[in-house]
Image (cartoon, rainbow, N blue to C red):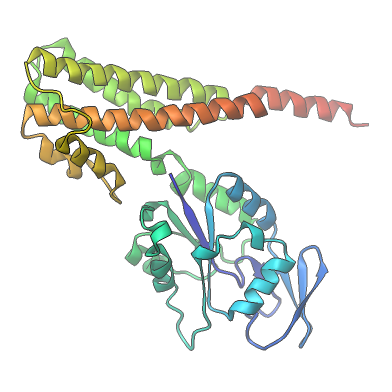
Length: 338
């Protein structure tokens, strides 16, 4: 999954006593401290918000694209970003800087960036717009997430809370979204094609639910060990469900679509659609063969994503250790202090 975050500049990345924007007068800038730059022409100081460097480093480590949308002249914005040491974290294909007369249509600036070929496959729900002004209505128009940081000093924690609850949490993960579709589809499938008194009915629904719920619970774990365990349970549940669908086709003498067939490719292409939901797949529910094959395609795609995530999480666990291990290290460090 790819995500992108667009930042405003003035009063979002940095602040000034007069809330002035950096392009209000033509001037050069000078770094006068680690977190302050001086506008030479009038002596106004712009201060980097607390936590911004740590935030940009975190985003870069998570391979989240950092973009800039700003109502300013381009040269002074880039100059200040360079002075603060932030410019290397930014993807300049996600930058739109222009000084507007009057109202600044930043939502249209973001739309233009998202139309660029490099970003065309990014879902709008994986886009976050950060600004000190309230652009909630404009963000809703273009279907992206929005956070108004206002004058809050503790910006990093503000961001962290928002990402964990809305954008960065499990609900934005493609394999969670797909597991939710699988659960909804399976609940309808068993009503139509499985004997209501059969244990298979309950087992299929429980396997589909387990796949979805264990992803959610896994991402609420503090420890990588706990996350690994629950993601593995989700993976196992979806594999069980995959076998149930394959058994259904075999026992009812129905065809299993070849992976290279046109029908299978058509189903697989649905995962690349923005805002995909159960509604995109329900056209297949009308026939038992098509329904089972559609879910076999989607479960295989979801399992591939989960396998990749499990490998990455295992590598991270090996390199960084678990939650308890890191707590123990912190405790030892505390005890060694004089």
